[in-house]
Amino acid sequence: IGAVIENTHGTLGKVCGLRSTGHYRTVFNLTTSPWHSFVIAGGWWVHNTGSSVQPPRLNGRYRYDGPKPSYENPGHHVPGHPNYRGGGDMTTSLPSDAEEVYRQAIPDPSGRNWYGRNAAGDIYIYRNGSGSEGAVHWAGTTASPRGLSVDPEVLARFRNLDRASER
Image 1 (cartoon, rainbow, N blue to C red):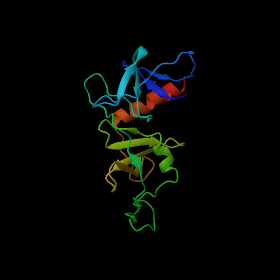
Image 2: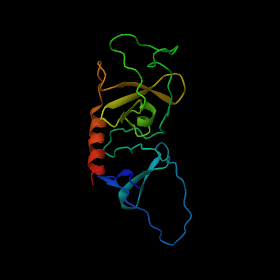
Image 3: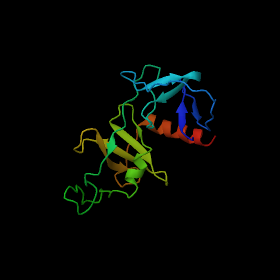
């Protein structure tokens, strides 16, 4: 309840409740290669992993629809950690809510970068390549001195999510 969903026309909706029909049916957990999403009644996309990954667009532009990578902290932004890469005035330390914010992060169209927003509205970026296969790490924020370039499609999706959550 409260999850934001998208239909095949790009309209966003919100799951407002659940109700029992009193009927029981056999159901299947589908994986549709190469996508993990499929359309149910009414044209609504569903994703069988339970993550917040959005479906591919139907207009021909690719949108990432794979599994959500796990989060890890390799220490790159933690002063005193052996893997710390900072020290200059452009270095931003790992925020205490980085892992929590990642739980609601969304991917860019390629799935290589993931973006989440903290309670103050700052956008965090998470990137892969920190060591573990299939994992991402916190790599910056729009609130840092260096700034952060956010994919325009990601910004549009955040705006759409805001509008849907206001309903």
